[in-house]
Amino acid sequence: MHTKKLALLVLFGSIFMPVAQAQIKHIEMRVEGMT
Amino acid sequence: MKQHLGRQSGVEKVEVSLIDGKVDVTPKEDGQIDPVQLLKATYDSGVTAAEMDMTARGQIAKDASGNLALRIRPNQSFVISPNELSKGLEPLADSQTVVTVRGQLYKKPAGKKKGDAAAPLKLLILDVQKKE
Image (cartoon, rainbow over all chains, first blue to last red; front, top):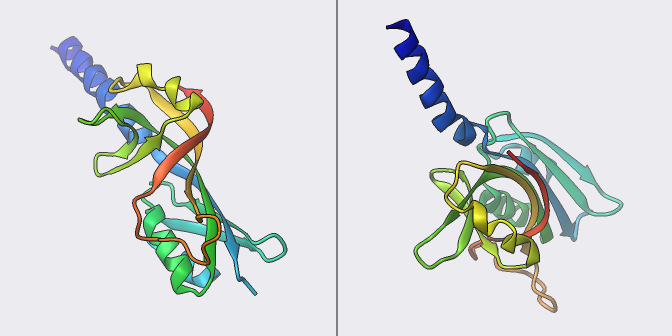
């Protein structure tokens, strides 16, 4: 039973982890007219 | 402008260099930041954005028209402008591979005083940093 739960946890973890890791890490802008 | 951008949702830190006109925006840990809103906030603060580059991690997806896109989250993705580097990402389309890329999201059209901040942003890949 525990093995089944663990297997499901690993399965769902592998499916959702890449999406959870996705993010914008940094933004850089060059602007004009700044004083 | 620093305060204006700092008030945008998802923004952790804004650093402005007056000398070279560079603005560095660090998103919060959750990364829920909207570049379109940042561009709009930049215009609202009275300055013109000449260029916007982004480093982001996401998955490569292909839409119905065959365009590649970098999907950051289900409701946030950026269509990728085709170039040599984007060709290398094509095999990863709709896979579970997460890529970290640096790309240009916006560049003010040459000769124009002000670009169109409302135009959809396209990501021109400048560097593929990591494939996981």
